Image (tube, rainbow, N blue to C red; front, side, top):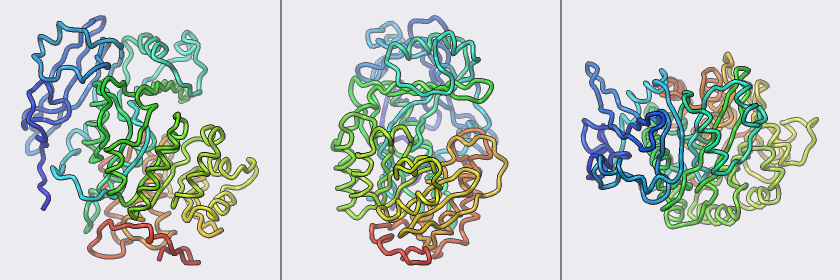
Length: 488
């Protein structure tokens, strides 16, 4: 029997090591306060405070600029705080960041997230994600800021350690937020939130693997996912640096992205990944991993082991340019391992080597000759689920668009939710996915909010096949697809 507690004292740690796991109901995750121009980090702990019968959870903040140790073991572990403030031997990389006061969404997360956290890991995961673990720093800048740094607006580029430091230093005094970012993590968090609040069904157990360093940003990434009921299973890489993405948004809503790979550029088939993939029902591989050196070997091995243990394998297409550069590798996995592919129209056409005049429906039909289930989103036009050379059209769910970033990630979570809940009709699965995507499009930000997940899960209850549901999915679940678009 699983034991569920509101607070998670996983480990017996001194106060200076409670970054990840609070040791008492009076302490929460680490809050970082870094005064401007201070060469030494200044650590404080936020506390849980009561509001009537409710509990407000303190949260991790990276405030104005200073030095954070990112090479070597995680700083502050097992040492007196004052002594550590006098010792900057570990501080060899400058990460300059700030975060303003928590938004309404962040406050909701603080008060409602981690309501139920199991102290016992499941024997088998419902969904395991294999992807890039990157911390996002997002802020608003003007065109002059980009011009001074020689950055082309609206582009995405990979930067080195020095370039990242130069940009962050230029942002000294600016306000911006830090988050556990990434397309795959958006999908996993949405799925976990839907699965935790399903009526008459067991929770969906969600986990992720990837590479983070033994730095504070790595701990921050793991903690943010844990609070969203997504367990990060990979061990931090000693002396490694966690990858970051700086997202600079100008007033015209264009986003300029600067990615620093750090440790995230290496994903090895290690002991933790081997154990996880052998105990999952669905393995989701993020397409961005195909960009990393030699990662195709890790992906292939993970897919082999997952399928041999009865799991489905899903691939996210992720990015057109990534597909174009690694088309052969994508098809190596799609043709030999994949049961499900998630793509938007442009990505699907790139996989098919179609020109831009071809339709998304045509791409879905073509891909379904090679992959049992093909999910292709087509923006405001709707989406398609391809099966056996046919494309089932899914009309868009009504919404007032606010921010389309993250729509595809949310759609993927809806498809996974439908499959895990045993829904046999592909049209119904697509409709669920479209509703989740529309909900995210109608808000600012890429993550499905907790309050919205509750409403969606309640609205989906009537579509579920049985009153008592579980997530026992194996490859056979989609091995037989009827001509009318149902899973059998």
